[in-house]
Image (cartoon, rainbow, N blue to C red):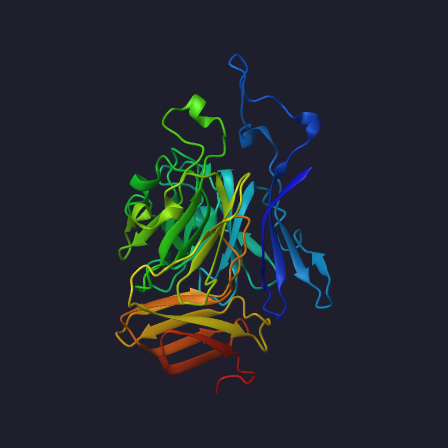
Length: 392
């Protein structure tokens, strides 16, 4: 039996039609359901992933007629079997092509670079994001691929199990990443935590993307084998203090008080008030809806909804640059993928701080077209339709 995990749509060949990437976890069978845990104490647990065979991810090309073709082998995806749980998309090397980051459980992480010829090459090791700073593997589960430090280059966060620390890889440019877990403060905060769904998002609209993680250990009996760890854990909210993070969970409302066994997390402005909300999936429980009542009153915002004309209809893969009237510059990417077993609102949200106007919005569409808007009012949902004629 092949275990499927996260999936997401993206236009890898920029033909205007969305393709599908499926992260697969491993091969498992009832006939090989071995016992793992402590047989003397009678405590059974999930087996370590090393007990099973890895499996390759899948890539389906859109045939433009409502059907898809499995192109995994020819695209180079099948040549790298893994244990994928989370998948996210962005253009990490700024070549106009969507790349793929896969969070792997207890093995090297994957970074599939889009070579632009219908093929991908796996570059995580050379890019510096396959392992942690000790050269060790970790249990990659949830993932986001976004720019948290406002330098225009998408970074990567991978959530992990307790005693591993969440892995933050800062994009240094030229195709290289550096392990920023300790420098950013994530190491101290997340050592005993286990994370799943995650995203960089600006909860307080100050212009810097913060970090949310849905949490809970994988072992429901972990407290019987390790007194320092907990199966149910409250969500984690970290405020971005311009490249370092501060835990603000305890001051962020009732939703952050109760420990749960959380897994997926999806993000979007549910009530269209300019504050991003979160829906969290709870094991053996009802979904948890976290309504954002405004992380910092008075801050301004902008949401952009893209409508493709030459590019794909939703504009997935469009890179957006926003410059506020104060000069604060931010970058976003149109995608519904990321997190863990979740799909989020495609509208791109920007917090603007005290800026009431935006001096420049620049959109780089997957078609290659570049579109600019100037002198735009804040506090609105802006629908931008792709120009069908090329720039002069």
